[in-house]
Length: 343
Image (cartoon, rainbow, N blue to C red; front, side):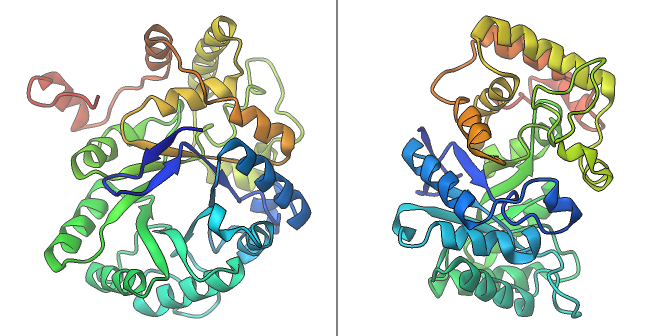
């Protein structure tokens, strides 16, 4: 297993993190992802630790907290051997304060997560989304208090736009609050918007990318190709899952998969392994969150590390997955002398 610094911090994380969205399976959204209980989750954790993957990502909304509870049971007795990453901000109850990044909600969310996980600290705590209603100063001062209290080790955010993240970093610097060192963001071979603004920001401000859905919302599993029907066990069989995820034009997807297939013939690797390996060559990427319904999928995803795509193979995938940038990025690309691309 390879380990990388998380942004500009001194904290090292494995390049692969196991996501726990497949734990619990409560509700239409998460039942389509998986339904691992404590015994199955414990076995997956065993396999991860054997491979050197010791970071596990969760959130309070995953199966209404069941994912955190199951993860807590799976790591019982070996808390010192794992790193826990979890998130809060989205609605977690019916009350008016059961949502957002207010002091009230964040303190309650962290305390509840600690109880479900069976631990007294969280290694990486992330805001699951930006709260434009709560003052950023209130949010950051609360998170700083939780860090100083020893309940959180490192801070991150998720699904922020560039100005959300930059304003938060500026306010943290102004008041001396603990700053974000990670941004959990969507990024894949069929979803490269992250590169336009968030990647240059991450490089400039030393914020590491914790990549969610690196297989393009289950579209880069290797089972979706021209002329083939959707696999019966795909999460995309759920209309809710299909609609809520990033929308990708069929022809664009097929073009990217065709290029991956060409590289697969050269490397002997699978479509998911190539898609994951490509991401690990990108600037700012600290770790990829992989999911697994079962041991077979986990072992397959672990095969994405320990080797590297060649520059020619990366270039082939880059070309196939490229899309015209939106303004002002297409304009900036015309002046590469003053706006060099991330490297």
